[in-house]
Amino acid sequence: MNGIFFYIGLGAGLAAACGLRPYLPALLAGALGRAEALGVSFSSEHFSFLQSTWWLLAVAAVLVLVYALQLRLSEQRFANFASGVVSAQAIAVGALLFAGTLDAHGDLWWPGLLGGAAIAALGGRAVNPVISRARTRLADRAAREALTVYLDGASLLLAGLVALLHPLGYLAIAALAWFAWRGRTRSDAKYAGLRILRR
Image (tube, rainbow, N blue to C red; front, side, top):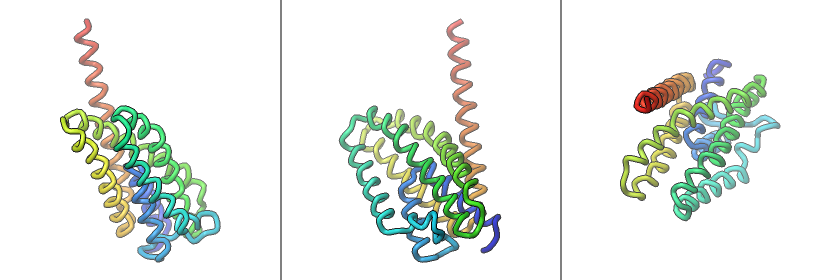
């Protein structure tokens, strides 16, 4: 698969996967890049670290650390941590993967930083309210913590599908935009109902 259309789809799809959770998409993309498989590559001078051993080990270590914090911290403290630190990591990694994908194939890379950051932020905005609502409906803490495992699985699945078929990245962005719009509509309706009740 050649052409800027496909590589934009690949980079955008990887960024969208990072918006769900950044760790497994980064590991998968780095591993595929090292193997030069499925058109995934970060062989350029600027972004070759994305497929380096130290980077992959660092991402794996951060993933383990995040799970350890989830088990040790209270749910509220971890939620605050996830909304801040993990969201920032998702945006940063999404930006790097998109830019690195473009640069490796000889395209202008800096728009990938902006686009990847925006797409990853969109992913968080679309998914976080859904996860929050799911947590409130689960009585058992273990079940609530398992949602993180499902989210990691979903991010890995999305990254794998995009690596296999690059144009799926465009569909992923459309789906995230729809979920974000639906979430905002639901939130607006909720607050409108509260305002009516106060009158």
